[in-house]
Amino acid sequence: MKQSIWELMSHGGGAMWVVVGFSIIALAVGIERAIAQWNFVARVRALAETVTKALSRGAIEAARGACENSPSPIADVFLVGFDKHGKVKPDHVVTAVHRERLRVNQALKTRQWMLGTIGATAPFVGLFGTVVGIMTAMDDLDPEQTVKLGEISGPISSALIVTAAGILVAVEAVILFNYFSQRANRIATEMKLLTDEFLELLLEAPSDSQPRKSKPSDSDRDSDSGRPSKSETKRTKGDDDGDREAA
Image (cartoon, rainbow, N blue to C red; front, side, top):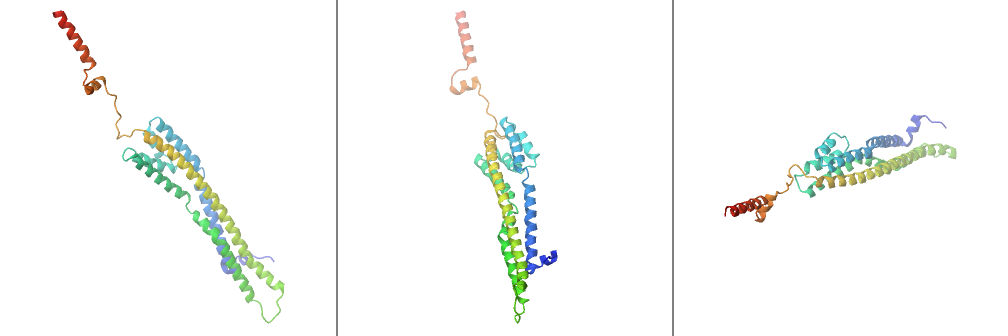
């Protein structure tokens, strides 16, 4: 028996509308997460390579400028390190950078809880609709008359459609949830490795507040040790020669 879309949606006392709404929400979250994670790793690696090359040659300002001009989320992580470098202890720099990295990791999992919730509740909503549909079908039967199988098979099969739809939506949500969770974990691991490499190079580079040590001169070394400098030694030697000639 063919049914119109409105008759199909009316099954289960409105539960079918809830199941369809779950399906739309799961699909929308999946599209949004796909856009957010699209080329995420490639953009992170490109910025990390630029920053590490600049730090390797001691160009801290160039590395900082690359982060300020980059839209990549890992740029915020690196900028925290640049802001703290030379102002606090190295251990505090590491802690601040990793704390910002964790914030970025949490942003990668935004709205994924919706997929998990839909995957867990959609089958029960479908089952609820089926129970309501069967109860409605039983109420329509006349208890004074003999009931034939054909009279109840149609309403019961229509009520079971809600359960089937709920299971289908739950499968959709669980697949999307597992896929994007796996991608978020892989991105988090990649960011951890790149951040560790960044910190190694940053902490080895001298900061602006730390002046470079100048190489001590020969005269400084001689004065510190209490020994006469080379110039004094030469001058003394010449004076002795002059005294001998005068004698």
